[in-house]
Image (cartoon, rainbow over all chains, first blue to last red; front, side, top):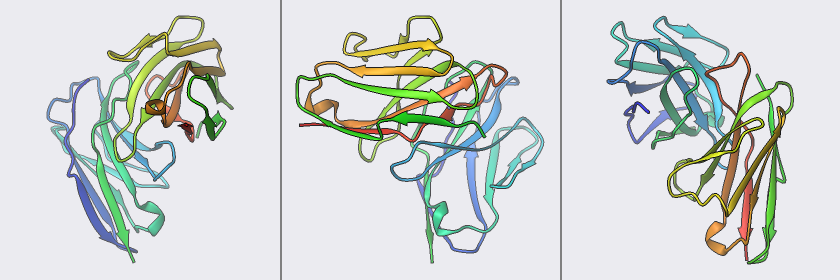
Length: 109
Length: 116
């Protein structure tokens, strides 16, 4: 599976926007950018995905660069419940998710 | 979003016994299910992939005779840890991917297994 790279950890302030970067240097044309998160002791949760356009849903926004080599997940108003490990993926149809280290996000009051 | 359940949410068993974990897709048909294992402070590790009605495909290093996977219907997969040992204590998580949902995997809440 194609790999992505993310910072190991980051802190953000409650109520502020959290911007999580991801490098997708080996992404291919048929792969989507996917983001999941795992809150402690829970199963991973789907957040958002996109191909090349920016996307927004009730949880987050996703910004994908024009060359698709990087993306940014934006949590517009981080809350303490957003403390989790966030994972980005390159994912094509029929492929399986293999997890790297992700970014450990700590939202501080 | 799609809902996946697991049962039990936690289990304690004695060394040498077998434990069965169920994974159900509640509101969609799951053509493919995945089983992951997660040790403390580590990321999820994929154990196996199963398609409904077919034998599971195990990742390298995962013993297929120890971790029995059955995907007998489009809404149910089971993982049986046979002859469990303390080193099998872990957080087991399943995920499911449905027909028409060729990308997203939806995850269950996980089952914490403790072998004493």
